[in-house]
Image (tube, rainbow over all chains, first blue to last red; front, side, top):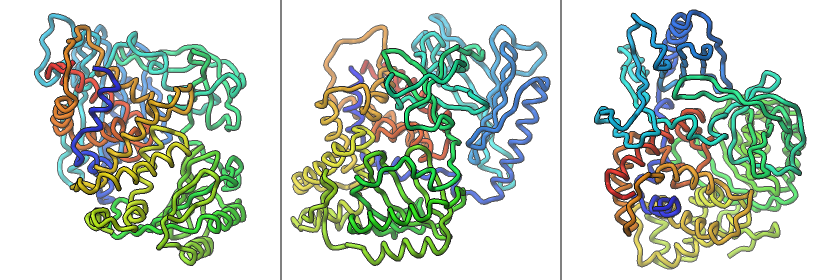
Length: 380
Length: 185
């Protein structure tokens, strides 16, 4: 069987799985705030425990997504804590040859070989994979009950079986963490040498932190604090993205947007973004909305970046440069998604009223349009 | 508009059918097609092809699950298009990445050369997917059916990219084992 055949066969799966995945809502959205507070307490306990276990020699940092990570020195037992509002997972992993004596083991890292008998639930048949058992603590009973604990088995390949890209998913430059963005590939003409540094990764087999020296490159048209590239062979450079990158104002964001070629705008009003029941979709006259929206966005170019939002309107526009999503939230928050990063800008109550009123007045609900490539729409 | 009403418009050969479908599922179809094609013009043509194919197959088909049915149509057309297109170093969307990831689930030291019907594999995949937990199932389907980027899957399931990579890696390894047990590799 080839991967292409597998892709085709995945295309034949039961349709209920597709609609279920598309409409998937993370459990955490339904949680009460008390659950979050309880989870936060769990996280604090877990992090404190991790620091104490590692003898205080570990570095702790807050990642852009709010999670905490603790990484100890190479060859020491590695304590890593990942946390989300829905679940706290404590990974405790040690190299097999350095298991401390007298320590109650709450984990295991098992190398599969030809003669080893594995637990039934692991079912590993390849000898180049590892079985890693995690101890997990669930926050599902955080409303006053005892947290649920359990184990989760992961299977990871050996370090030498990984591609160079898979080995080194992180890059640090000027104190900024960049994550590998495998789909951002650039040619030599699109990059400029920036400096020397190294990329890092963790050998999950031994827990060892690995680094590799390499050159960093800036990407034409992209802020170096948003993306850097590394040469990854075949004449191509792979991007590393700073997911916490934010511009300060809408104007800075719009600098890289070409509105001239935009020729599509669809909106939806929804009181609950996680459930589109009761939503309605309106197709607008594209040219008028294009001009108005462009003027509006540019006139609000000093709107500051902000991260809060409530109920929304939603729209999609295309430009020659980007495929982007616009949401206009009650309370005056404008959301723009797409390259280079998701953004929320405060345009104020007046801005919200002005933009949504214009869109409502210019709604075209009866005609069917087909997009064409020259920027105009032809009614059916 | 309810899905059933949209399907009835197609059955009645109403001129409003495509419009209603586009209003409700235009963005959804666009996302799937764009994930695979990554080129605006191709994506738009593909979405229009989807509407056209929907018009041709309904009736006689009477979909019970419109988003699922539509997703399959869009995905199939986009894959046909991306395979016809000359492969370039850039602009392949998530297709090349997904293809590369799934190779992992197929690499086996002892490959059994036999013809296996696609339907047989699809039935096995249904059994495999149904046994996954909700989060892993959503991540697997979004990534390998919908060709969502890792980042987009993370946003959808409420986890960061590391979490998604972990879930997918684990699921791929389980899939490989499952396919071997089912003697499909």
